[in-house]
Image 1 (cartoon, each protein chain N blue to C red):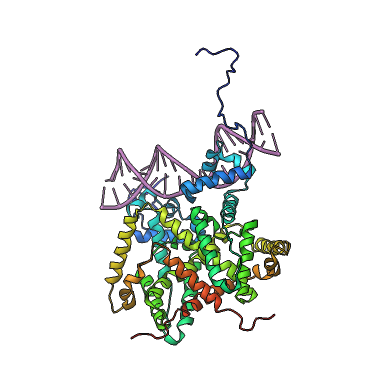
Image 2 (image 1 turned 30 degrees about the horizontal axis):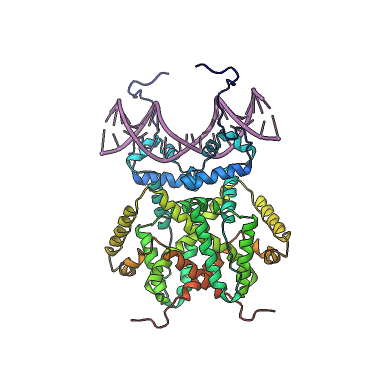
Length: 239
Length: 239
DNA sequence: ACCTGAACACCGTTCAAGT
DNA sequence: ACCTGAACACCGTTCAAGT
């Protein structure tokens, strides 16, 4: 109760930078922390505000709405993608696959960002460097201009869809055991179908339910897409 | 105020089937109505209950949770896909593309269902008929078993991602004019980038921002995927 | 067995009032 | 100019109480 008279009686404020002003960067930092710790579902204006020790209304001075905050999170993740290897025209297909793997890695490192990435057009510097690199690789493969441009849309769409699917599944509270039980139940179900109406589904029950976990499925997809793109190469490249 | 004595004095109940019991089908019907009228965002347990003239708690006797309701909506949409043409092995690539177009059509006819379809495994009869037909076409193209099985996953993933992207964009309150302005602003932005660092992005600015609307982008994607799958055909089919 | 009102613990966004 | 408390109009889910 007693207190030295020369001590101020104002209550001890949180020692760290008690009134550091809000700004976009601090908001995105906080949102990113919530995203990585608790997933996309948890990134609410309220939770982000709480992480900053303020109320939700305070964010609206710096961020137009939730949608814009999502967009900023996507830019953050896009900026984390690294492509160090110099472009080697002879290895354009392999280098394109490496880019897709790096995109998936960055999305997985920021669980939940995939949902925000769907339909977003990242325009930050590092995202543009990705686009430029993809175009360089595609032109190295003699892909026509319009096809290359659409490929630059198709490639992130596929990677994002895979990443989003993973986050939807992990949003369930299933243990790996539950998943395994579900998959083996699925296989039994396929096997039990009437073979006269569903002959291939029955015969391929094992294949249909394999590789659900792990990256085999993803690798299959990038192999198909890159092979499909390669088939579009111009036979006689101009100049 | 006056009333014939042989008329019951209970207040006029809503004439139509005043106490028809709830069941899964009625719930899914109502949810589908809300989905088509107002999109996925609007399909809440509360709204669906309201459409049925009851409270949200009543639904939980028939549907485990929102997730299960989503699943049921996906089955509904999957059941609307029609594939009448008999399988023609010589035209397996064209028929596979036709299937993808039909999937997209059904998803568009049920706006919002795409979001629910991501990560879902539709197991209803008509969905299984789709799977069987896809496998038949892929085997007609001499695709190996495991590749065919993964393709059955990849194909709906791509179509669903395209459909979901469309619903995300239409969830914005942008008019077609706004979209056009955005796209042309994007083109100007690409064109204005430093040409020494982003030469291809600058040069292909027009191609990068074309075909955003319409089905050209989708057609490009299915062409790439089907060509990529074709490249996996076994040279010497066993059997 | 099925249905329901009320509650609990959440959302995004707005707005008048403060500094 | 920036921040805030309080409110508005929503969510999914649970549960005790009714029929």
